[in-house]
Length: 542
Image (cartoon, rainbow, N blue to C red; front, side):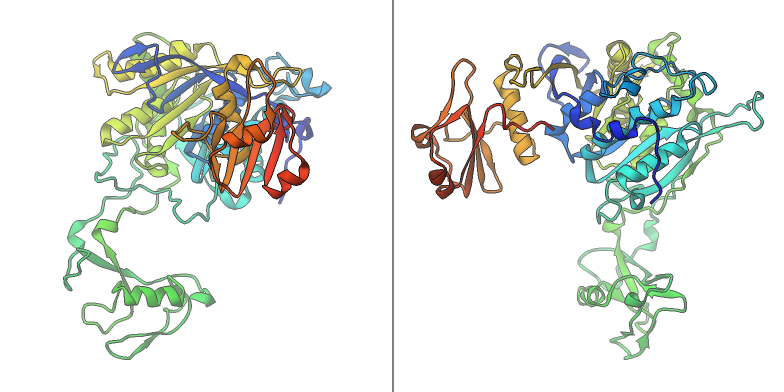
């Protein structure tokens, strides 16, 4: 597979591993139009801080849990005044720190800087994305080609879905050879072969009222469904059992049990499933042979299963101003009831329609370049329209994370101008202290609970939750028949000895025990499947 090379690439490929792990500090909650000191625990989060550090902080709780990621990174136009600030240990890259990235003729390393900035963030986003999830990235011609190659490398060429083309402006540019009226949204799956992964409109007991983007197929015509054989599963209609293309493993004779006639797929086509699956469908009364029982096989599709409304075009041109970047700017001005100095915010309808094809009613959505908070508005509005319970996590590093990003969500929730509020809650966090001090010791300021969460994640790659148990206070949990203990005290040295073993109540195949010292013999630990790990030396850094 072709790969892209640039200045500094070899130094940023694993840079996400060097980023210090920091904890989240709760600033305030917002619920039912009121700001609170306590956490709402709504699942919605807005995080103020560097998005590379924030993404790493999210891993213990959310690795593999995000169903949809949407990001709108700097397009690297030369007019955005973005600054490269990643502390990569390389003399060439350190020269870039704090420097505004300039235009093409002014900054010959502008593309290198952009790629060095994006690569480690995309690596962490890949970790956070669920196996059946998808990521959507807004971009324009400045970096579209570079981004595609980097995404191929990180996510895999086979997981590329498409490049959506959407109409970002209606007016015609007169300062270019050709007026550029569109931008792109690159779409990649985490695992395109995942059986349950679908990017199509779907039915959550309602049909979306599509006005902003006229690219969805029509809803199911229930008049085409009936139940002539009184099937207990309800109304159904017959769909073709053959499909275009020739596939030898899906070309086999089918015998009509009513007539004994043998059928092969029509010329240039194949059956939709392999023979064993066909036989299972036949036994389940999912195969019919026409109204008379004398024609080629067809597949029963039941009305209550018909949640798939067909494919979506990857060209999103509305012909209406409310689908363009101009509408995004006007919407922001309307929310704040004044001009807001914010460059080309996306219309929330654009993101909302991504969510309609890529998420389900309880899914979690992440935007790590949150900007003005458009993604949060899209999530809350979709929840309001459909009664769904989608959740969002936003990350914004700029100083306006509270005054614009979070404030927008508050206004949308409470109502603004003549627009009624649509409800919604969230918790606002900042990036706090690092897990480890510069000398390698644990940072006790962050508290034992956050340390326990971190250690459990490094061992199990799953989120830690404090549950009721009858074991000692150092018990972390049991995972894959391994019991984990973190014997740590702030002001004293802890020891793994027979006295500590006597306090352990959980039965498991093996035991992982963190302490400062160990007085047990190696033979004893081997016999009893005990794995001693020294604090802090053996705590994994990731």
